[in-house]
Amino acid sequence: MAIFSQNNLIYLFVFSEISIALSSMFFTNNNMHRVQLSQISVTTSFAHEETWAEVSLINSKPTYQLQARWSFSKMPIPFPASGSQVQIPWTPRRRGYQKLPRLVIESSFPFGLLRAWKVIRSEKEILVFPQRKGNPGFPTTSRGDRSLDQQGLFHDLRPFQRGDWPRRIDWRASQRAQQLLLRRYEEETAMQLDFSWEQTRLIGDFEDRISQLALWIDQAERQGAQYSLQIGNWNSGRSLGGNHWNRCFEYLALLDEAKLS
Image 1: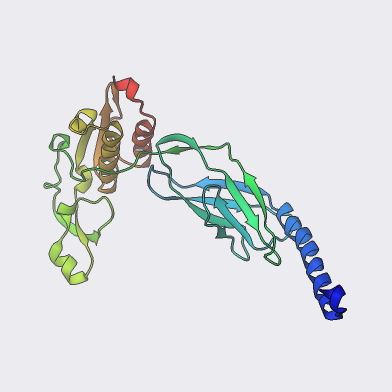
Image 2 (image 1 turned 180 degrees about the vertical axis):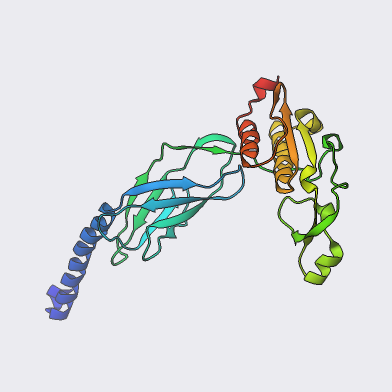
């Protein structure tokens, strides 16, 4: 068109577009070339429950307009303009050890015409705990020396949290405060609960039985009860706290059906 009409403005437009395209090739690839992964850290993960993976970058020079996503996702999450960390949601599909999905770091800097990317394959294995689901009520055969109905003198109220026992809700106080409140007692740490594989025998699916035990253990920990877990010949012993919780969940995460047959 420029040659036919002998129009210098069209020549100027064409050469400008070519310059922009060539410049974009250089700057887009150079911007991505500086990107180096520092680490990927994952919070405590449960199967079929959304968790977060924190991606940290280390760059020798400033980088711009970076985005991160999993290889199976079409929804990238942008890095902050002045930061090199971003959190990406991740929902594991099964329990046990598994590798993170492939991570894609990409950018369309500076003009948005071209896209450059890096695919990062992490060899790090993450232990995914079983999903916490099932009947929230504790089995009657789990009650130890003290039950939930015999916890001593009333102490105070606290906001309701996921996994708390509904029977402890103070409905009158909740109505006045316009939020769910639970009763706390002076001796609630004296609760003792014993969970076993046999308590889930009415649940047919193997994974659902594991999820039910995971839910009970998580609730017992939240409610300050001492609890134990027995599966076959393995017994965790009765205790309370983060280490005990981790020990029980690790055993459930790696439990093999063949060991119980």
